[in-house]
Length: 182
Image (tube, rainbow, N blue to C red; front, top):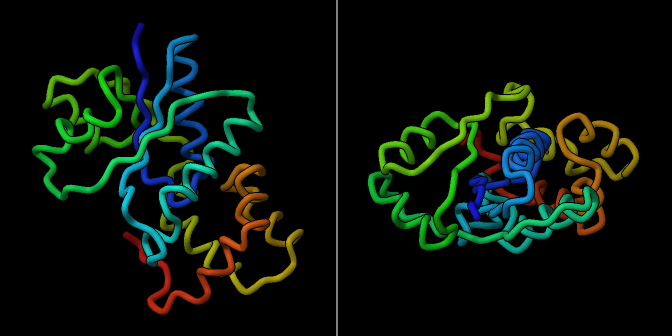
């Protein structure tokens, strides 16, 4: 039995992630899926507004809404690309990495780790920094329906509902440095 691994920061979980994870499910058939959340110790800062637990809940809400299941793990940053794959394997295990990021693809392939590359889907709208910028702009809008209408272009409904019901959007307006593009 093989394991299919999707790696990301999920800051926040958006439709680009949804596309990638759905691609992993299509490749895996009935094999297990592991979703690895990077930057697991980060949170409550401009480029990483949500904690590992919050991102895990976002993904779980999406999985539940779509009647899917996966193992979710966190991976701490080590800021050492040549040793990243060995470090990450301790958390996500062995299997096939499913990615749409060319740098990650090369890093894993250079470590002799099987990779299935998925072409980007609407990348210009689904880049995390763009989604965070949109969320920042909406962080002082207190009309849930208007917020949902704007966010539905880039974030799955189940995640929007979680972000709104947990005031996870509005905290962005209180972050002094704003939302980074990194």
